[in-house]
Length: 309
Image (tube, rainbow, N blue to C red; front, top):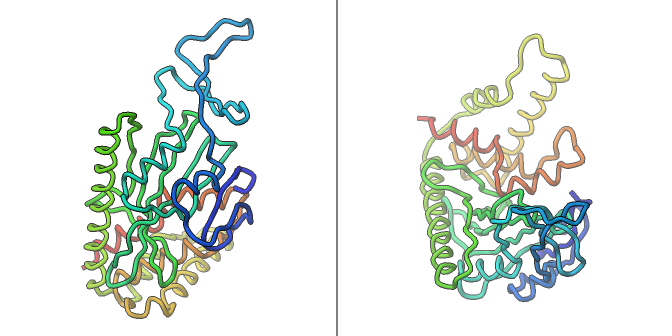
């Protein structure tokens, strides 16, 4: 992903790629816009054929700072400027919003920002909720907002798909102030509903007992092997199951050991912190994508644990 990162700032640990500007404290939106290198505008310009004839129904999104073409979009496309994204998030959270990280990918085609919300507790643990906002300027995606709760004691992301509330959703780009406020209030309500549902879900799993035999049964379902599989496939399955069990017996999960919540957190810990068996070129980029989309192993584990009696 490093080659796709154009600019960013961060406030905690240095990212895997070693790029960006580190700041001591999470800045406000005015500072964040500049530190992230997002202090530029998107301009929509007409598109022409090689012969100089304008192509109806299309326009080019360009960056005013250097003229870079970010993408060709339909004539109905509405630009959401970077400063509008920060203003939306300010309006959404209210008060003095602190941004943990923000930046630009793929030459400005995609931008993101991560804003910290008030701390809360989930299953008795301190949790820092974050709201992530992503947008594309090349027409390939919509404006998306998602909740990313972090379990402080182990720095794990509790990105769990729930049946009772959505963790991510799209946000309309609206220009009028009153409409923007209404949209921000809607997003905040959805964020609050997700956190409430996550707390209820965590409490239910924390009160659901589960033994290691059942956990191993679930792991066999998640990482199945057939008798005629190669030794490499069998060894990979054994290794990932062992990695999971190491996470399950980590000290930070001691108080939840023997519960479904502890079992789920072990899976979160494994996918958050263990390196993949094959570290592909875009492995880090995929990790970032999971902030928005979550991880299939966590969601599958959560679904199986929810059915444990």
